[in-house]
Image (cartoon, rainbow, N blue to C red; front, side, top):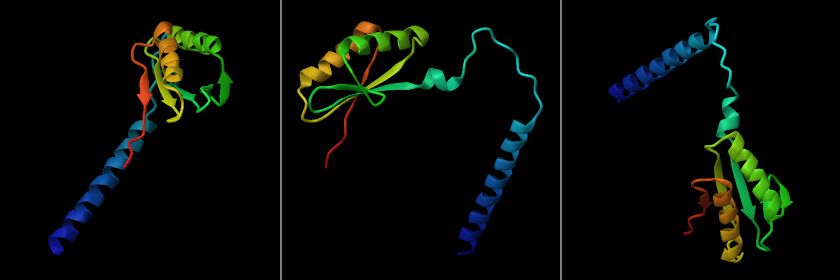
Length: 122
């Protein structure tokens, strides 16, 4: 039991020291260089999640969209970020043709690999 307690205390000390070093690195006064094509990291990592409900309606950001509006929006997202990620989530009762039409819109707009989201069942 004693060796186990020793290991737990050593791990605790290690994480406390590592956390302290991490804070000190963030608090250093460093003048960062200026880039002409800079932008927030979160913009480039933002993922579009397109939902297709049971009736076949396309929903993006809580809004129901028609295929033309979706195509325009995805095309604009690809123009601003060529590595744009897209996830397509379809209701299990919707016709597969509804999901295929959304995937087709994504591919036509320049998304290289749209991700088809599923849920693993029991």
